[in-house]
Length: 171
Image 1 (tube, rainbow, N blue to C red):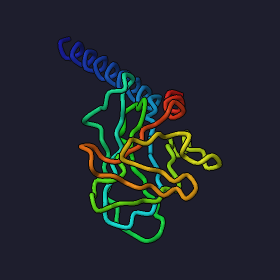
Image 2 (tube, rainbow, N blue to C red):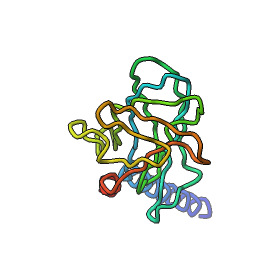
Image 3 (cartoon, rainbow, N blue to C red):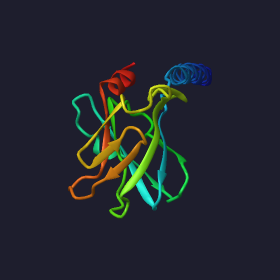
Image 4 (spheres, one colour):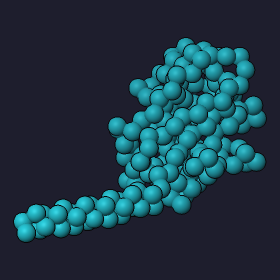
């Protein structure tokens, strides 16, 4: 009799564990993680690095969520993709364009923000200038898209997303 009760209890335990496991698997399948990428096309003549900064809903930098990428200096335009950390919902994005104080100019031809491989900000037909504002360490020639960089401040030459980027990220 004790063996029969033990077998029944073991069977019930195994059945109940299987059901919760299936529910967990279904919940995980329903949860979709968005993948964000900042894509830049630029001419960096010297080796440098670019930092993508994520801002929360209060415009505070999320300090542990920076993405940095090394850039090899070249005379031709190169495509630079910076993946944002998974599981983070950015409310705005900033770009530190240069940490190399010897880099005096860069030419930026494209900046786009992608969500799940689809451009959500930086429409190619409009260019990126309506989507990003520069800080006072950058002087932009809108005709040539040449950016003169100033490294005389305690912060890097950079751009920050405009209201259009914020709106695109909130959708």
